[in-house]
Structure formats: C-alpha cells, structure tokens
View (cartoon, each protein chain N blue to C red):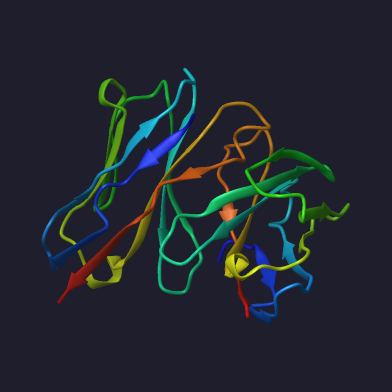
Length: 117
Length: 113
C-alpha cells in the first residue's frame, strides 16, 4: 500500500529562520512521483514541485529547496529565511506511474507552518 | 489562479439529502480528479475521470458518483448524505500524458447537518 507520513503536525518559527518540513513515503512501485503542495487559509492547493523517482537531484527554487533521498524514502522541503507569507499548511503527496495512476495523489496529513514576525 | 473553478463555494445540506458539486477544468486539460478533505486532514482521492469515463477510484462508497462532460467540466454527486460527508471537496485538472501537474480549484465547503 502507498502511504505518506508527515510527522510534524505544527511548526512555529520566527521570520528569517530556516525551516525543514519532513516527508517519508512508502510504496512498492519502482517508479512514482512525489509532490509538495501549499494550502493557504483560502483553501486552494498550490503546486510547488513534482519529482519523479529516478531523478534524485536536489532542487532549489528561490528560498525553497527539496532533498529527495530514495534510500531513506524521504522527500524533505526546506524554506530558507522564512517569511510571514510562508504561513500555511504544507502537504507532501505521492502518485503512481501511468495515465490512470498519476491522477491519484496520496497525501500526508500536512504540516502547519506558522511564521511569526 | 489555476484556471480551475468550482461552484458553489459553500453549501449546507441535511442528512439524507443529495448534493451536486461542479468543477470547470483548466483549458486544455482532459483529466479531472476529485478529493475530499476533512478538517485537519490531507485530501483523500475519490475518483478520476478521463475523456468522460471513470478511470480510477479511491475507497469511497457508490453513493459518490461523478460525470465528466465533453467540454471537460465535471460534477461530483453524493447521495444519502451523512454527517461525515462534511468536508472541503477539491477538484483538480491535468493534461494526461503531460507533465502530470495537477491544478486544484478553490474547493466547495460542504456542511451536512
């Protein structure tokens, strides 16, 4: 069975601190996709990144970076120099490969990030 | 703005009633998925439609059903509403065979009394 675990329920930091959100996944598939989404109070899920299972290169986008380690089944997300606008719920998600599987996202429970001024 | 719209924004129903939620996909997207997000939880996959046919289903009973239309808009229907159906319902569209990036709408908040 596929499963995504985000062990951190809530994290609170002060602005400009770095913060890492953890994500651990389980799957028997050899090929799969991993995602991060942001959900602000408005409710809409905002796509942040997609990573496929055969690309373990870390990725950086501005203040955001992602560390994918297949050996530990982890896909962690780091925000550098956090800002108040980063306050939201962040979800890690997993999907299978192939047309009928890629639309089915398995989400973690989410991590609520609060950035205080 | 993802280009995915949902209606209505909020809805209140009573137990046993039926409800229809609507989603308009992003232009050019031929696949839509529906998710249920209970308060404080991650979204759970309900089902997916591709070219007007159901193409994958999560662990939801048959009283959850859907439709996708030729213009790729879609509906989620829930019969015999139960209190536990109270949730945020999200639809997401994507282009099958594309980059597999799902774009979510703002959701419909359903409250069952």
